[in-house]
Amino acid sequence: MSAVRVPGWLASGHGGTPLVLLHGMGSTASIWLPQLEHFGRERLTVAWTMPGYGHSPAAADIGWADLAEALEAVRAALGIERMHLLGHSIGGMVAQEYIHRHPQRVASLILSATTAGFGNPDQAWQQEFLRLRAEPLADVARFGDAAPALLRKFVGPGIHPQMFKLAELSADGVDKVQYLHYMRLLTTFDRKADLARIDVPTLLMAGELDQQAPVKAMRRMAEQLALVELHEFPRINHMANIESPDRFNHTVAAFLAAAEQDK
Image 1 (cartoon, rainbow, N blue to C red):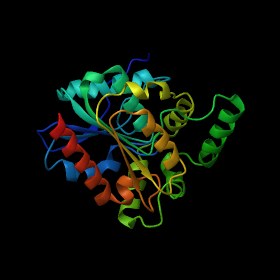
Image 2: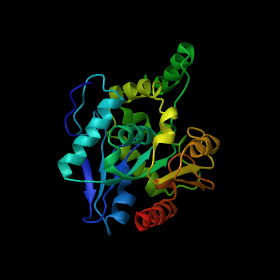
Image 3: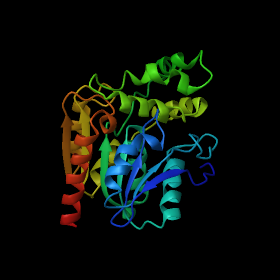
């Protein structure tokens, strides 16, 4: 494993069982501002920025175990005993890696637009996947320069302009080199066989229009989980937390209330 220093984070609120938010591939902690504001009213709410993005220190050739330990470093730095863990897209993969390594630290798990196993072991498939992701970045110096066009593929037509602007600003903190590294790392993720071992209340959230983490794939995940609730967002693409923040927040809040009532 690489040596990973404590990543940066944004935080709001205090008390309660903390909610920790893990962003997706083309974002940083600020993509969670609608959730930090909402959930910070009643509990400590923390959004990290992945190692190598924004002001979070980078580590050479960081892997899944390193990402889990980077999250553990954030937890320890904040003095959190147990947390509700919400991961979006690649953040959902980090969340799965983390719960398998530190199950005692997770009170509940929320997985948004993600998967338990990504891609295809075929080398030709992987090379083509990576080529298509690298191509839009070939002629730009910074990831943020390509972000507006890339983001349009991940949000639905109903997104509010201010929320799209938030996504652009959040993407501006993404490091191009690290982004491509994380894309390569994506093709190695496989925790499908471990889903049945997750024994905390789990919420899966999927967007009707999402082609990156399709509803049918998240339904298959749900079949492997013991304590699971699956919520589908109509007319939503890959980024429900900014496409429809009110619905997203309401869904998460209802799940957290039920999880805490049943503990």
